[in-house]
Image (cartoon, rainbow, N blue to C red; front, side):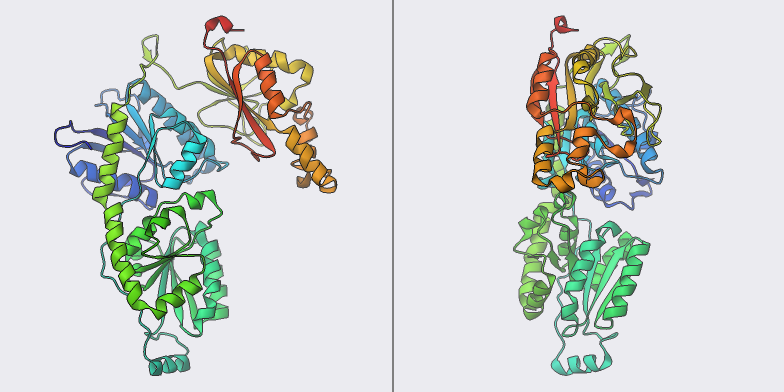
Length: 566
């Protein structure tokens, strides 16, 4: 780890939704900013390192007249009030800035705290950023595994630091039998015998919370309970809470608590048990960090959590299950055992997730980044090189950040490309221009007799050593799907998406340009690219549309020798 003998680091932490300054303190309503930017940046500054927290929207990546940092950490870019257009605009700005800073020799680290690669509105940005920086940090082992599976990337896994105040371990002890009889007679309302549960999180995570609440209805008549839901206001949860209470009160109650960080800690302090349900079938949920778990343990509360990978190291200290009813029954029968688990869990959380431990991990990662060799930046006409040039050919309505989006039509579904031109003739671009040519569901729209000439034109604009990435439907998979169910497979609506749409195109476009004119398998498409003069043609996991098994991705490179130019 970088210590006293090492030079102090100069770090710029690039954030989106943080407010404040070093004098008044930084704040954010987003947990990702609090745990993964404000906390480690503040800790590094306390150790004497030079740290700036900069807003993405105001970031001057040229550093004209400014002291350049050693490292820039790019934090999470959040969907904002401007919707997709606002996100795309800021994403373009960040990616351009990353390229400019890298050309100046500044090291760049991208911090990933969520599995966002498959999100239709934001996934392309996160995928592009990964290849544009020197190093990545993942918030959990599972997220690190997903990153390595998708990208050739160097990374460290750094979890979230504990943010909660340390509390005294406390459990619920059932009142004597006489008290419980009086409680039943009174209906349980307002009685001190009520079990106090709490959940805190984003409204989008409500489905598993309500699924657990329904399971716990069976407990209510024997043991009345209240579940406090600490979250931001949202109409749907309010309606669901009202409907639930109308059916199950007074023995089972849900209560919405308006989120603030202080309210969150106060509500947990008043509770007996913290519930952390998750959708374990979702790649996004499985990649989550364990900050809610470590914070709850630190406050001295028993935790019942779904079997998410990041929670498994705490298996001996909490109840890991998707059966909260059984877990609460066991808790009520053995409060002493629960106290022991909380005590050992507090120690385990401190050992693994204290701010001191997490800060040391950040320093270790930054040291690795600084020691890695820096490729010499290319310089053109005395200016720093621009970002890697990536063409998104036949973009349609899929406008990707970090790409020059090219199409033959002026707009599709209200989305306009950056460059309008016929893909048969890319004369708008010079020879050896692009580092990457991407075409998603495009090659199948050309006749077989013209595709080789089209590919030669695309290869012309590709730099020696550059990549060509083609995604399209897999004809073999479509045939198998059709033969497995010819009745559904022959339909023109969504039922034919994996069959007839592959053969002929989506009829809903009602556009001759959207008709499919040929089909490919991974083998035939790789052979076509090889015939066109590319090398190392191979299949990789598809990243757009339906992905496997319906779709496929084939990647190849242009020979590095300039004598191969077409």
